[in-house]
Amino acid sequence: MKKPNNMQAKMEVDYGDKKKKNSTAHPLGAPVMSKLRIMKNLVIVCLGFLFLFSAYQGLANLQSTMNMKGDLGTVSQSVIYAALIFSSLFLPKLVIKKLGCKLTLALSILTYAPYIAANFYPHMGTFVPTAIVLGLGAAPLWSAKCTYLNEISVLYAGHGTDSADIITSRFFGIFFMVFQNTQIWGNLASYFVLKPMKPNATNSFESPDNDLNSNRTNLTCGVDFCSGLNENLQPPTEDKRYMLIAIYLSCAILAAIIVSIFLDPLPTEKKSKVENENVLSRVVATLKHLKKVDQLLLVPITVFSGIEQAFILGDYTKAYVACAWGLHRVGLVFICFGVVNAIMSFLAGRLVKYVSRVAFMLAGALGNVAVCTALFLWQPEESQSIYFFVLIGVWGLSDAIWQTQINALYGVLFRSEEEAAFSNYRLWESLGFSIAFAYSTFLCIAPKMYILLGFLATGITGYLIVEIKTWNRKNSYDLPST
Image 1: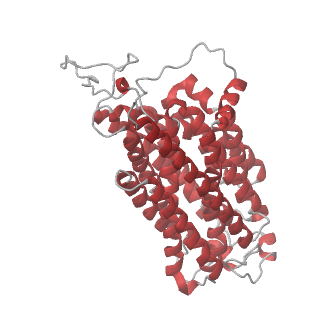
Image 2 (image 1 turned 180 degrees about the vertical axis):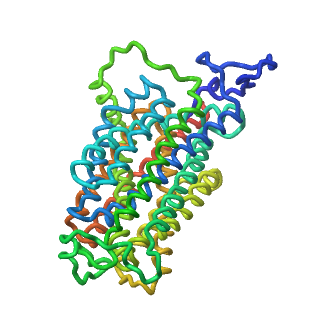
Image 3 (image 1 turned 90 degrees about the vertical axis):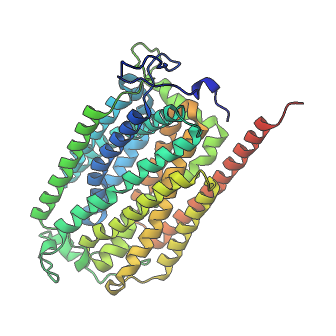
């Protein structure tokens, strides 16, 4: 779609340098950020998410195994994303308009701390309330992040020749490259804290819980895994749990401090002081966005994005890695996921200028299908350690494509309605997470993969229709008048 030329005009920027007399202002009256300042703010957003999600992702990877009693870990994850669905409908647009992106980011980061701290004493009474708080804060956090990156990408495009669409994809690629590094640092912490002191020692995973010990069975790991416990699935001792959670909690608090102190407010941003809109009208605005055909067509692929992440977090970790190779190696395997994901996120943001988004998306789908096929056929064993890394590496490659390209696609298609669009993105992705974690407690691995592949097929079909419609619109705009 064509953008107004005045929004893309080249501007000489003065952001604190009083010696420059030829600086221009943004059309809305606020000074425009310099390229250097824009990149600084991109780095700050990335650092904030790096520290926060090094803690949260590392912990989330362990929930299905470290908190197995009563399926507490997977239930809490399902509650998080159920609350996030509610939050996506009611909160992002309201919070961002009232507080601005910067304050929304800082306060939303703090909502993760109580859930992390609840892992000191895992119980339904501590997990459910803190999971709800986290879910309520997550939607404003991600919507504010998407809005902030989308806005500064437009500002950055005003300084060069690349279009705002290309810069948006590049910025999201950089962000997700850094974001996926959270799988490296958070999982390094879990691996070194949880690993046995001696190669053959199991005392780091002795469980005092008689219920867990009584449920120990001879499990079949892999596609036939349903539920149960073996020696590899024993939870860690209390001292190791406390050490790991203390590290994660410190990272979350540090993330809030970094964003609060170093991130600049958007120059085009005006906090709403007097508005007649109520919360219900904002919900209507988010739901009204579903009237757009493009948004409806993107719903299945967005739901799939949540399901595929939940599968690798909750099912691959438990049924394949922890069951066959040990709980403490979950973090080690996810480091591979993080490295591949980070590299691919960066490359996707750069290569989109030369390789079509359609090619990327089809490659992502092919990767997921290939891994699911292998998981159906493979019987995991401890001696086959290389396969754990290869399969999760390919999955990480596909996940990087989904995260960068779907986010960028929402930004490109709905640039004038960012809050409503990204609220829909979080709403439907969260629904995918919540559904997958909910049925994770009673379905075996095989039906879970069938569901995942069904959403993938439906989602990629809807996405291709959107691309065809977008291509037709673009060509109709470019036709010479007669």
